[in-house]
Amino acid sequence: MIKTPKECRENFESMKNERSPWESRYQAISDYQLARTDFQGQISGKPPSDSKIYDGTAMDSWFMLTNAIQAILINTESNWVYFDTLIEDDLTDEEIMWFELARNTLQNIYRSDASRFPTQINEALGDLTGFGYCAIHSGYNPSSNSLFFSSRPISEIFIDQDPKGIINKVFRRYKLKNHDAENIFGSKTPERVIKANKAGQGLEELYWLHTFSEHPDK
Image 1 (cartoon, helix red, strand yellow):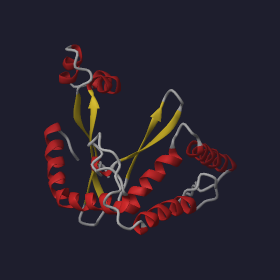
Image 2 (cartoon, helix red, strand yellow; image 1 turned 30 degrees about the horizontal axis):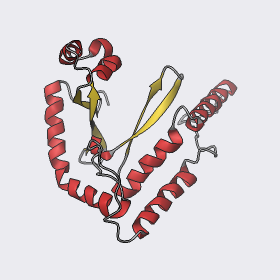
Image 3 (cartoon, one colour; image 1 turned 60 degrees about the vertical axis):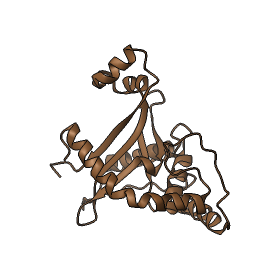
Image 4 (cartoon, one colour; image 1 turned 90 degrees about the horizontal axis):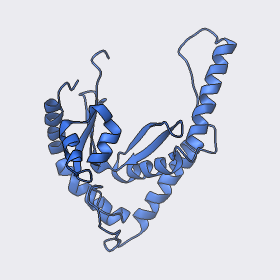
């Protein structure tokens, strides 16, 4: 478990160095197969280009595979959310009703425009079929009283696993404007950012690290 900001930065730098040999491979996939902008999402102002695409077979296959996976496994038009329990005893009527209500609630969230799930999961599956892994962020939007989903570019995401192949550490490195950071983090905003906002530097962007690690009680 990561306990301090220093330990967080050290862990991230180690994972970043381990992934660096793959960066050129990801870029080659982006250039020669997917006709995307630079796979590094933080590079902006670069228009999409297909000048390095000499054969559209890979791009067409990628597009069809991505949409086929979504249509078969997580098609929002079908009822694909199910709950089960490890309890051997039969469920009571009240418990059955609760599971049914929870299932319908989640299904309606996934189908709603506010959640953006259909479009964002398509983006995530595109990364999965193109690069081999993907990341999708979910959170709660109090204004719409609903969950929301946002596919994140793989350039932001760094993943590690234990000797058994189980993911035990995830880092997200992204840019955020100072005034946006203070709106998001409120009283927990770092002093450096608060001072920058007071000095009129609210539009200045800084890199942030968002991490998940194994819980010590697991």
